[in-house]
Length: 408
Image (cartoon, rainbow, N blue to C red; front, side, top):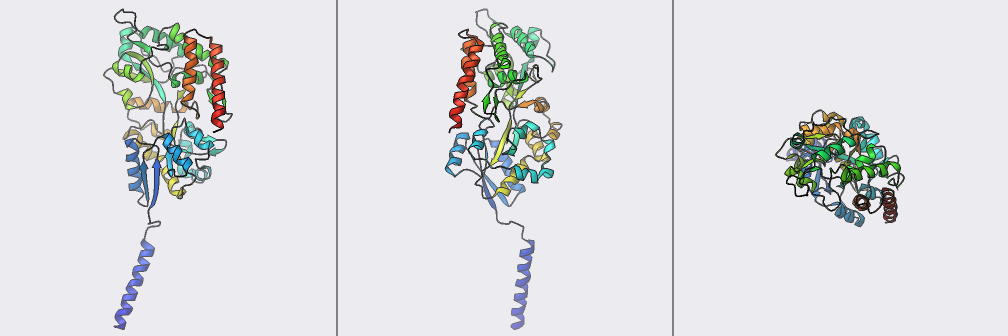
């Protein structure tokens, strides 16, 4: 009996040692909550991450920017979150995004930041601190209805076309097909879209807003010249709709009743029944600008498992994961330069090649700026005020609204 008891104790001892030695480190699951991205694509991304990291479990809780903000302010926010790049500045300003600078510097060799497009990181840098990692990039380029170009006898423009080229072509593409005095086909569908007029400004060396200076740059020579261009596009070249007659850009593009439209790299703009092409935006005096930005992934400063959350941010930027996201999930252009050469979609290739020219026009008051800009720009187009007056009014009103926003 004594020998049997000793044998049992010995076997139990071996079993305990085996468990201690062979049990995976961190065997107990760490659970993280993700929010801010309700698209089905994030479900596929999180599912793969969880499968590859059995000790970390991420749960997706759908929510928009406002819902994430309310939860964060209330102290019940997710561990990892995504919000629009245009709104992320407010999260940083209010201390709702973890400073990941030290983590990034520690893991530089693993991250290979030289392979990441600079705009993808610069968008989330404030001073010398980094507050988010990108998960994919966004941008807006020119879509051309080649059937409309053929009807008008216009050759497809080259990649070094200018804004004046666009205006001339837009005028030739605009048609009143039945002679009733109403335009049926516009040369350019969406001149009032923020990505269009901001591209004109930035490609000519200007800027809309400076996030480090907390200052707008509307009442300047460059912006006034850009506003004059918008005025001429509607009133002189007559190639784009003015106030009160602007159609929905996506609707007329899908119907084939516009020659050109500036739009993002998403499937709904590419599913049409005619021949089309995607070109870089026209060149200005300072080159080409593609408006858009990286989409941020940030960590809640109150997250109890920062290392595990950081693991997800690094993982989604891993080269092979970026290839998968780009080619299999068709999710915008990638964050890494090396991934561009693997892109299969011919239209996405153009977006990928333009990522060096990507510009985030603002990170504050994204919904306010276009409404104020277009309000006074439309008054100028209707000849209700001069362009200098319109620029001065835009500058003043946005500055006042910014001061109010900064006090929140």
